[in-house]
Length: 449
Image (cartoon, rainbow, N blue to C red; front, side, top):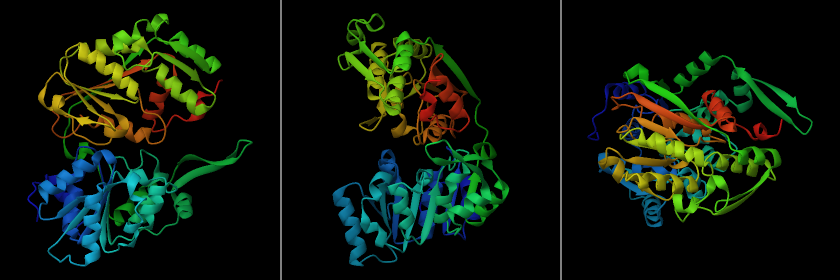
């Protein structure tokens, strides 16, 4: 038994699933899925264990197992030397009942390693199992082909209100229902012919109580924070800034050139924001993807009024701030503003994870890129989140919901404030509404008319 102090609700979850070797812990963010999942893995006591997570969480999982389960041999499978060691230990047949081998790997790498398909007597743990909800992706196809003896699924938002996303996870839990039967039983839909092709449109859901009952029979546990602990209040506030004529012109013509040296709104831009900003940008929205991209940038990094509103917002409080953003150039400009205030800065993104200022300075500002930090991390030292821009596209609802839990979690004692910087009259307003409805803003919303 590993030396780790579990909370009462975590002990109850483990007790309730003691007889299951295929489990899903759908615990709200902040209830300690990491501790419950790792302890279940330990209790299952398989010699070989593979944990699949997001790339940004590799280090966290490796450190967790090495700290709380030093008896086990934990390998970072993204590192070539440790991956070779892991595979050699299995193939050598030298593992004994007193050994435990744990390999940590990320979703975007696992399906490139065919060797793991041959292992059978293993425990497979998926952190943020909602990431395999689309069974047609390469990573989901690979994982569904694996042959684990035991399965542990962890997620705070397994469906984001979309029950059709559960089928692949049901399959891993051992429920042999086909996808067609699953949809027939639990999803209301119809086929629509829009002239180009037929597509299936979801109208709603049915037999939801029966679905949850079946999931419980296959080892799924659902638990919300409010069932376990009383957390502080949450307050959301929209901060509007005017729409720019550049945004309107681009949306009308799908073309614009921004000259940050001469354009009035961006005069002396490079001096104000630093030398790394792009001085001249030609935006050609010749398809929906590029039009969406540039529309987002015109509402973010190229909206000087929004930058000024951001500066005013940060100056309004000397407490720690968490700032969520999308693009690298947003970070360049926002960091420059904060550094000019002489405020300490931390950042979490695909290139860097530096939390020194967050941990040590009470007036720090921590910038988090959605893909790198929205779905993991404990930032309850702060109670203020600024959404400079919102996530968009597949998975945006999950990221947004989970990002709010970075501060509103066990250990938080203060009211949590969420500020949304929105360009009035732009797509950003509708994007926020869609996120609150649990829906992704799709490409066709950008079409004229």
